[in-house]
Length: 186
Image (cartoon, rainbow, N blue to C red; front, top):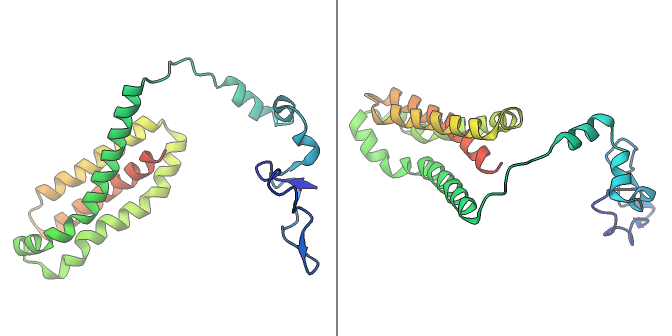
């Protein structure tokens, strides 16, 4: 019987269970990422030997000689990431309280719905894209680039002479915030 490695101990007692002749678990194929029970009894090194050669080379070539960060550095990193996600969330919601002032300034009542929507739509639309970028490029470069794009969008909003420019600035800020949100959780 093939069982997932992570579930092997948990499901040992119920792996043969069924309801009215229907198995509780779908059939397992050899290529579905499952491991045969006999593999579980091997040592971790022996299980690793059954990996494809390119996977073994990738694991073997990944050595990290850099020292571990200190408790102070970890605390500062955590605070910076927490502030980043707080500011992104704040920017997404603070426009709701500023809409009366913005509408009075630009005198464009028809554009009110776009002030928040432009930001949220671009934020949601870019999260998957940034997730892929974070796997291709270094995390630090992607994260700082997304903060830069977010700040450019905020600057456009700050100097916007009309409602259309403000909406474009909100959309640009949303492009950056999608990357910040993805980066914080990396």
